[in-house]
Image (cartoon, rainbow, N blue to C red; front, top):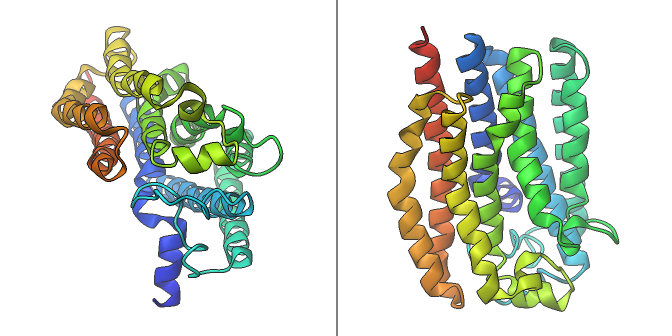
Amino acid sequence: MNGVKKWIVAIRAPFFTGIAMPIIFGATLAYYEAGNFHWGLFFVTLFGGICAHAAANLSNDFFDHKTSDDDINANFTPFSGGSRAIQNKLLTPRAVLFGAIVCYALALLSGIYLTMKTPGYGVLILAAAGFIGGFFYTAGRYAFAYNRLGELMILINFGILPVMGSYYVQAGHFAWSSFWTSFPIGFLITAILYINEYPDYDADKAVKKNHLVVTWGKKNAVYGYYFLIFGSYAGVLAAVIAGILTPYTLIVLLSLPVALKTVRLFAGNYERIKELIPAQAGTIQVHALMGILLSIGCVAGGLLKG
């Protein structure tokens, strides 16, 4: 495997939809409310978000290697258990950490540029919060993922912060609408993490990575997954009823059959590793569909406003 392919594996590039969807939605929400769209700023925001996501993936792989979590995980899947770049000797731990530093630096440069182009220091404040949540997710004695705060950090870092940040870049100010409407996408990215904690259960428990599935046990934790999936749709409905989102965003209901199929797969296979893989893939699909359809709804609402 050549060098480029090794790094694509290490940064888990196919999963960048996790950060791309909330950034796209935040920008289109601003378009719906303000009626303008800055393509240049949007692409810099997207680039910075992807760099931050890559950095978090690399640093998490490094620190999960340091605790031996990924090393002892015999139940990894294409969607969980880390990138395996260290375990498969594609890259050294030192190279992975260096890659994380480079990606964080690129994300910082993007944040500085966006701060120069927008009022105040809102972008840097959100970026700093994102760095804390991403780096210390697995780093340090009090790492969030090891102390029952991992799911909350994912909700914040891949839901609330990117939606609010992308909105801020486009609109030039914060808005409560960007906070409240970040939860549907935030719930679904958390659901991706949550279902991935099932195959990782034994290894995580062995190294005291006390996320909610380890804390509650596999059987009791299923209700958390249901809450995240159905709570995302309830969040969109509530936002439309409250007048925060345009009714055109109800197009997200087109993704409900995929969500229901995924929930059924999860409910019947959460104890079985191989059989759970389609449900892991389905959860990613539901998240991507939610982001795309919400964004289409906002663009439609902006174009047809008034």
